Amino acid sequence: MSRTEHSALQTALRTGLVARALPAKAARPLVLDSPHSGRLYPADFNHSVSRRSLHRMEDGFVDLVFDDTPQQGVAFIHARFARSYIDPNRAEHDLDPQMIDGPWPGAAPSNKSALGVGLIFRRNLDGAPIYTAPLPVDQVRHRIEAYYRPYHRLLAATLAATERRFGAVWHLNCHSMPACAAAPAHHGRQESHRADFCLGDLHGKSCDPRFTQTVARRLTSMGYRVSINEPYAGAELIRRYGDPATGRHSLQIEINRALYMDERLHRPHDGLRPLRRSMNRLVAALADDLGADDLGADDLSGYPVLAAE
Ligand SMILES: [Zn+2]
Image (tube, rainbow, N blue to C red; front, side):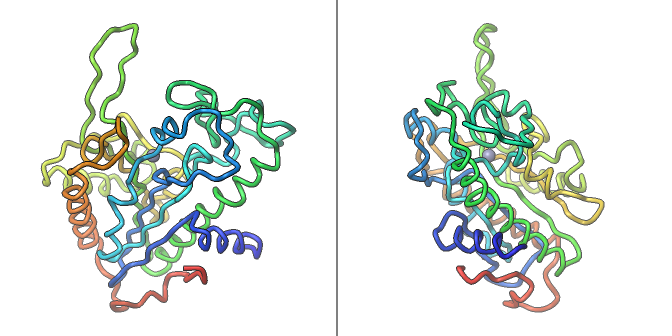
């Protein structure tokens, strides 16, 4: 990490744009992150749609679902900024040049950008444009340097430290999904209800398939319905950090929002508490499966401790 990168990360930690909780007891080779649960809307966002419509794009309260898991010996990282401001789960170059007021060399818009949900979202869930004019180049650069990159640096540094310590690392990339997939209106079909959890491993490319099966089995044994790679197989974060051939295993986990929140009112309901317990049990079971650190309890020397934490 260069000096400039390190100082951007320190600032992001100090000002609470990104957060990391380290294991409360013997470290395990498991790292969790939640990139989409941020509720912070920076002053320069300048969106022309309602804040309420942007809240609907958050993976609401996923940070609260997992915030106890460091008690199980795992590190947990989450973004505090809203994903509609800049999305850590997109490639850095996945930008629509038409959204930017000036040249942007290297833009490589994917189909996500074409759909209006690239690195910087162009529209809300109703399809309304989020901005009334193209964004100044400096502002896009600021979002990348002060928000997007510090999140990736914090996650990358934590995964690397865990891998150095244990020789391998397992990464759970945590999200939540709407309870129903709306069927195309012209078919006039009913909405289809989703499983309780969807696990995504890019069809076996981002982790050892046995890890996916283990997580699925643990969830099923708790009574949950689980789907794999359908409807979500995973995106940038597990693509970037998962490399099973070298011992880096990244798995995306999508929780059905009906389990813990009222999607319409955008607030947690009574299901949050039992879900938190279930996720603690899941993480504890996985931690047991993966083994503890022989170096001894309470030894956090393997993690790069950052001054602002
Ligand atoms: Zn998400």
